View 1 (cartoon, rainbow, N blue to C red):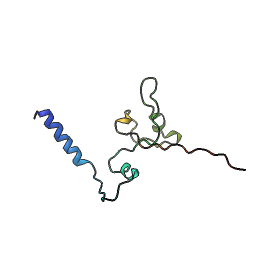
View 2: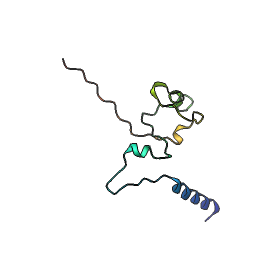
View 3: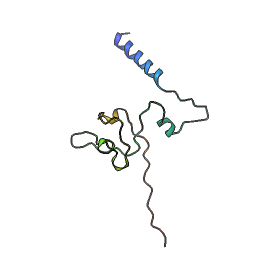
View 4: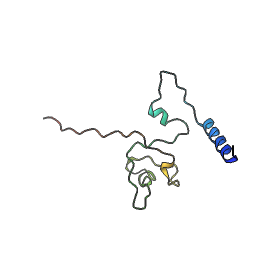
Length: 102
């Protein structure tokens, strides 16, 4: 085994040991909310991802830097590559609007 492969294998094992474990009974499956709130896990993106701007950059910080439009403000606006840690979560389709009956 080459030193690089050995080092990568050791790093992978260390990372797995540091991840929080979920104690789940055979008949219990954690909800998405429980998984999302697991210690140390970055939150999932609960909305449709905006298209990148003309420079190819994501526009997450246009809302999340200061909490515009009801978006939760980021605790780390200096980090610009949001999808390096955050991944797309379940996006619920908006409900159909119906006209009130008279």
